[in-house]
Image 1: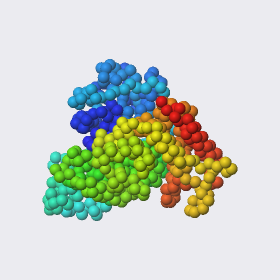
Image 2 (image 1 turned 90 degrees about the horizontal axis):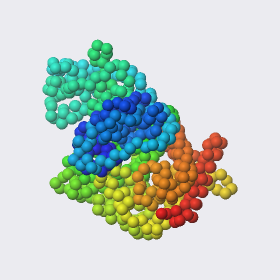
Image 3 (image 1 turned 45 degrees about the horizontal axis):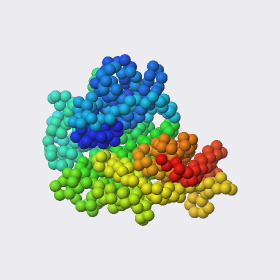
Image 4 (image 1 turned 45 degrees about the vertical axis):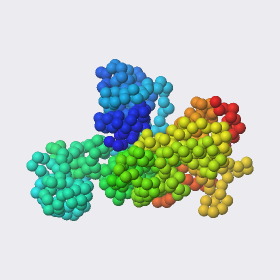
Length: 609
């Protein structure tokens, strides 16, 4: 339920609800899966008594056969019919395979319905997606192709014999014939109940077995089987034949270990991991997933968003696995992701920047831990994260660093100080870094940082100093040669796409966001808001978005190529090794970025409203 509350708490119309109301909604959520093309809401159908929130994938709003909007993760639909009591005026269908939360009329579930802020569908036709390939496109093979043999035991078999049978068969579960039906014993049951001494190894299997067993037909597509796992909160499914007899067992990790490496399947494996080694095993599939997404022509921004979502899931699971009585997963601590992960724009080889905020008054312990204790616990989480293959920031942007792990009051004072006194050491760098922060736990608490940025008056002195700091990163262009490349060392003849191409656009977009205080969203989101505010022209915004997208695509392709060959992911390229068209596009991207940088530097004060 924590994932439901954290996800809804970050989305309109639920983002103003308090924790109690979010929990009330979460208790009524049903997870539903819709394959591409499925009509979810039909125009003219009876009035709805429930609405939907897109969790993954995309849906499109259709008016008399014409697509008028496209909705993605976090967007709500069906609410207009719920609010008015009228038949739906527009149809909604799955633009690609989609996972949605179905929620009854939220006004009847929450204590403060006035805090729900609904919006109407947009009227502008959304941009066409660069690909229509569903994320689960390869997951339509029958689940029977990936099932494992069944290990059987009777209700009276001693638990120690069940364990031996599972081990000898190299499986992770056994099915138990009970008087009341079929039961299942998994390796998690052994860890949670036998290893802890709650149940003796001499006890009969019936004392450890779980009922009911979740079954699927042998012809069920892998995608559907995965969703069944998510909905049921299990990581084993029993596969049955036409006579409903068990013929095999499939695990979430099995689905991810074959050629079907879908992000949702990976996420299921992450969420079902009961130990750090199991989580590390699930995480080991992430690089191959990125390669497969790229090979299936999924756009780079989509790949980045998926990688960010998977990273969030890993951190959530790590927090659950490392939780103790002194440091429960729930309570007055908020973990933040920083940098590219916060913007949903990481690269496959990106390290994970993190921060931490706590409010002692909200900590659910009688004897609140000290700052040193909290940071020590954060260090354990980060150590476990690296065991799972995700690297902490080598430059120190980590949740165990006092600069990035503070109490709520300390964060507020620091953020205000950086903005009001930009000449103090590190003020510009640190204010830029926390502008790229996104809470993944205790959402309301974690928003304190960006709320402080929004509320604090940003003087001309601060904006000028920050712009100077922002523009210190220039694209590698030269007057004589096409590119400025390294003249010596490991990367001689090369240039860094991240430092020279992505960072200048990201930094300028962040500065634009900080001029208004609205720092949420991706780099393209920030650039569009910059155009809407008059700080950029529409042409400048679209030019920068195009350049950013092109360079991001190239950077991901470069890292994917390294992963595919077993090398180290890197954003360094050698221009002379690129094909002529790519080299020309890259050169033009660098030049337009530099041109917009120069215009903004010269005209920003006159553009500021």
